[in-house]
Length: 135
Image 1 (cartoon, helix red, strand yellow):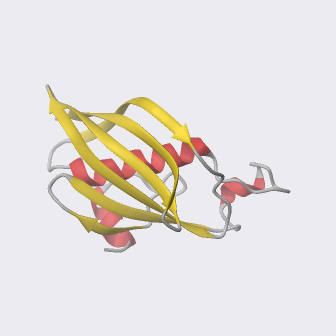
Image 2: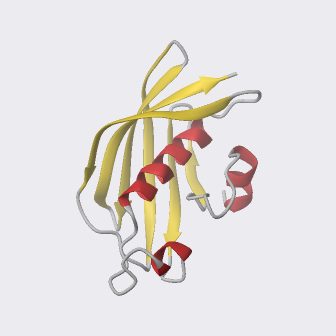
């Protein structure tokens, strides 16, 4: 499921869209990706002589991936919180950043997910994210 699928599911648009495609999606888990290229706009200002993909954008990509999973007609999942965020390795272009997100709990319209970002099957970041379902 490529970019059109992502654009149909998320309200985000470039330059603030950080998911390029979906690998698989189930009832409570999703796998997606973002292709990181040296030509990406962010590298013009984020350490241009030593390009590193910003951790905050990795977290946003995981949250957008969760949004694709949780989006239902008539609702908007909003990023509501971050717990246990860890950055384990630098993400440098070119690479494919894989997002793996799994629902842990849903209570009173707030969904808690476990999220990981991987490059070449190595975890580079992880977090527990909270998303609120607005109707």
